[in-house]
Length: 431
Image (cartoon, rainbow, N blue to C red):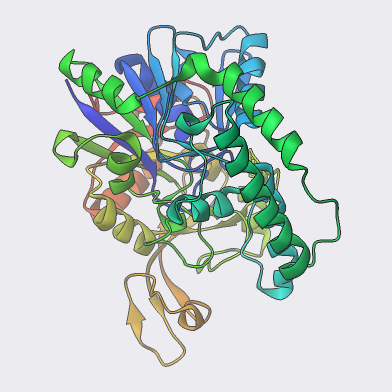
């Protein structure tokens, strides 16, 4: 038995969906532990492409259980659509998908608040997806959220919904100067009761389910969304998400104690990308950046927004390894670098005064003036796409992987050479 956390070690979009899908073959239960439908995991199986936002990637396997943990905020309308979309593609979630009764719901007013706030920020936007994730987490912390366990067709619950809707309408109209239509509390309540009935077969105390799986000796796989540097505490604040994306979040958001975790796998691209606003020291604005975007098909699975591209940033990874306790690296999209003559690795930063940093400082004004210091290595100028044996990689590609391992002090157990399940090099099993 082994329990593994899989998470992003950069700013998200590292290819976690494929890796979780791959590792699910060896796991009995896959637990998504944080975030909402502001994340997207793309998995290619044969000639089919699945884009998952809330349902764990393990749902694509017949003999696994998939858990939406208490650490998520869930848009019930979006979740129902995802379940129905999967059914239309031959994946039946009944008996395989379990939703925590302690997970908070994203309400219609959360989405309105999200959009209205971002519109008012103007030049200081933080790049929210507008899906209500931040406001839903705010209500969770303020203890005014609605959880799956709360939904019931009673006068007392109707009164609670009325109060919440009316409060948010006042904020939208008088504080945020929202010019659009406001919400009708009766309609919100009816929709909520309807969603509750449709989703009730999936809802349970998932912490008990996870505990039982542990007793049965199942391998557990904890799946994170986004990436380390979108973490609310450890990320590039305020350009972050509203939950803990780091490994510690798997325990609180998945309902398991830290002593039960055996390994932490950090997913990292062979270069660096970021969606939305915020600092990005190694970002490229030249032809190389355009090539990375083109070869890597760098567009967000959730928003469709183009991703910013840059060189591999070892400073970011060193911090990610530290705050997550990463034991193993998974390097993805190695094949995107196939056409490059030379490749750069950022090993430190310098500010305008000449001071050196080996980790991204928290001060925002300082982040903006940092210049990356690069180490340059030779490219391989040959095809790696689809290679499944490490020894078959070009020599310079192997040297690049091994150089990253030496700089970071963590072995790369898996190398991905394409988007499909079988386009993968397994150097060491995580289970």
